[in-house]
Length: 556
Image (cartoon, rainbow, N blue to C red; front, top):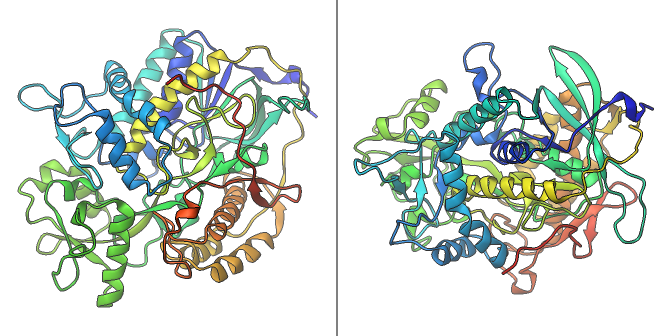
């Protein structure tokens, strides 16, 4: 055991350094809190090029923009944005929570601009707006054409650096991965165990250090789980860490069966890992999806055509590939007169992959993109475990339901990051007296490549109960191995999260949003609800009663 005297204290530990994590860290530090940020990788400030690791936060790679109702946009309203979100979410969006997040969007964007973020503006100085799938009007602000995420990430990192230089009590630790949420021994019927800190490893250059921080509040802002699959738009760090940590700490999760596949990931034959995204905004500005014969992919599929919600378009792409026998479909950019200047990030990704654009057509396929569900929270980021908060992609607020509306992710990260900071400041700042246990050195691990192949073949856009049952059996038979560095802990987390995804997907015997069951192709109105899961006594994810959240609820 490591005594409490041998580890540091903080008021708030933030696990993750993307939009939600850094927004929360800055706000809490400015409120006078002692904040430590654990960043598994490196920030965008590290630069790029040979020998430089890619930025670890998914935020950096967001292309489209931020969906926000601006007060000077006469064509839009909070009610209209909420309505579009409800339609995209296929019956599982929480209307009240969604309304509060959307309503706070303009203020959150204003705060980001005050921290130095620069968005594209017209000659009149007004923010330029584009439109993406599922949106009834133009409401997407963007930066650098299609480099919105990079602008957001760099702005927040710069503001963080400036805050540290100004003397705020804020520390960022790179190459640091949280391995365990530390809990107090309070087993009272009223609250149960509460957060006492976090254990983590620092793996920089192969030398692993095991450390811990005592804190009454831990915010999980770890992003998604795209690397459950062999090809994804997510960076290498998107391995479901937050969901795994929350499950092991006793928190509830929900809607994990809804993994959104983006309809237009760049097609690179035989490539694995992160692939370049071809932004939905290309279709918002006139780009067309066509099959190998030049026929429209979405004609007759949905009234909104290529700008239908992502689950609809992704399945339209998959159907076109199956119908034609081709390896991909194409995004026809010939209607775009300013493709190179408007979408420089997309063009750079295509060139870096060595893909040729022939006759203005970009080869694309659906790719694992976004975890719509996650750790169950209330409107302030509070989970079912006292002192444990979650925000961003790893959290399930109810905003996304069964299928996320395009560009609502950065919106949610900004709003919920700020709210989580406020919730952290509300929690009693006394430190629990707790010993840090010996680090967890053993875990069930399925080799990553095998896991990704199984999930890609059997738990992707189309699933069956029989196939998923076979995958689940293999996952639960994964050998227990010694965990050494970050990659080992990632693989253990991926194995657990894959189990939870399969369990959730098997429990939903219908097709809805991003969840498609070939053996249950119809939508069942009786299943228009979320099902929570927790870890059972045997360590296997199992359905749980309706979660009892321990935070507060926004006033109407």
